[in-house]
Image (cartoon, rainbow, N blue to C red; front, side, top):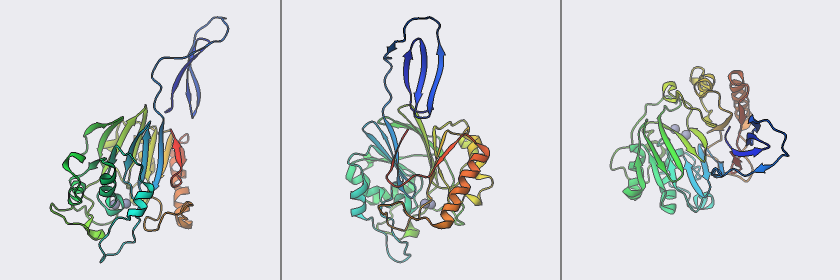
Length: 309
Ligand SMILES: [Zn+2]
Ligand SMILES: [Zn+2]
């Protein structure tokens, strides 16, 4: 249960939630019902917004965390170097951003990050490959935070645990981006650089970001997210991907699908048509979840539609 507001009604203590009302305990007595405000701090408003591809905005009060923001949605061209779409970035980047988490260094996760960091002053968090690209783009060291699986740190109201992850099975080895890289570079210059996942706690809510469809079960052991954001593309290549994930995460209340849209097509006003195969894959994913976690809600997010937690 994620959104909580303690109330005391006629001697009963309950939890009010977007997911329902649960009475934890009641005392006896026959006094008239009274409502007494509880002085415990009210949790900040926490929302999630899908930005397309593997991109997310997590807002806690007035603070913003971005995960793999990618608005440029460039067509892949092996010859032409990739440059960020400054108009798209300006249109969609919040004015103030606390921190940007980068799960891996492929261009559809990293290309826009230096521009966003430069505009907002946000801290960039990711692998050494991600740091090399950010440095090549002129982001100062004060805005860079290299991390590895197992690290924990705080940025504003966000407590962040870094998880050693794996990339989806795309049939190519993980390659680091070398020191001294020059920008712009072609899509294949954006080596994976290892894959990270992030477990973020803020305002009493716990959110897990899985930006590419694979994971190391032991690394997720004991995590109990309220919301699991789960990449679905290519998951069929990973044995029992969905059920193993639900089990190790303790069957989270809410799963949001991730990295399922066509990342080379521009954002439209309406949700992109992902085609029959894409829709069938998402429907199958929901069935996979419910086979192992019948009470888990699966939501396919719409671009730029905010979800309250
Ligand atoms: Zn990738
Ligand atoms: Zn990707």
